[in-house]
Image (cartoon, rainbow, N blue to C red; front, side):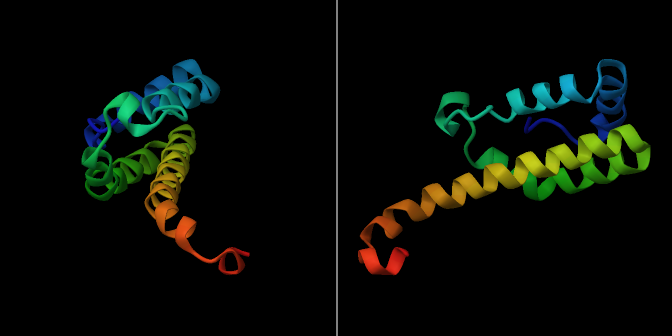
Length: 105
């Protein structure tokens, strides 16, 4: 996943067009780790850097490529947000566990 750049927008759009959005979504979910813990698929700081540095350009390039590619760009954004939320939850979990029970309601 972290190797995708805006230069891959057109080939990724072609894949989405040729194989369909469902197949492409399954592929991207697999590349994102599909619910596995980051240590299970080797993601560390690379994902954070990719989201900040490459994802905006890739999504823009997909968006201007056409309507089918726009759905792929949206899926990349959705998967990135889901990943970011899980990272935030994991980072905050030790602190939330230490809060008094009444503070977590």
